[in-house]
Image 1 (cartoon, helix red, strand yellow):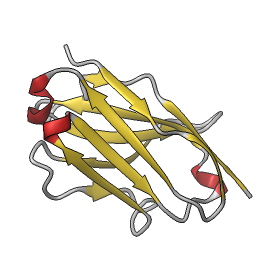
Image 2 (tube, rainbow, N blue to C red; image 1 turned 180 degrees about the vertical axis):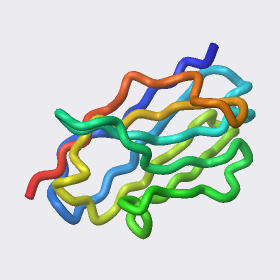
Image 3 (cartoon, rainbow, N blue to C red; image 1 turned 45 degrees about the horizontal axis):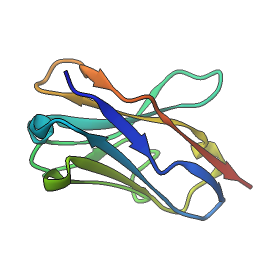
Length: 118
C-alpha cells in the first residue's frame, strides 16, 4: 500500500506559477512511476504528465507541454509538478497517482485544488 499526499495547490492569477508536491511515506516510493492528473468540475479526469521511477523521460499531455515540468526527489519520496504560465483553464483538482508497472495506476492521492483567476 502506498499513501500519497498532494500539497501546494491554491489560488493564483493567470500567468502565475505553482509547484505541487506528491509525497509518500513508503521508502519503496522510489520504485514507482508517478503520474499527475486533473479533474475540472463537470469534466472527466485527464492526464497531465508522468515520470518514471528513476526520474528520466518525463512526458506530458499537449496541454502541459512547455508550461509544466515533472521532477522527483527520491531521497525525499516526493514528486513535483511545476506549473508555469497558468491559465484559467488549468483550474482543477490535481491528483498524483503511482504504479509499480505498466498496469493502471494503483494508488491515488486525495487531490489538491488549483484555481487560476483571469
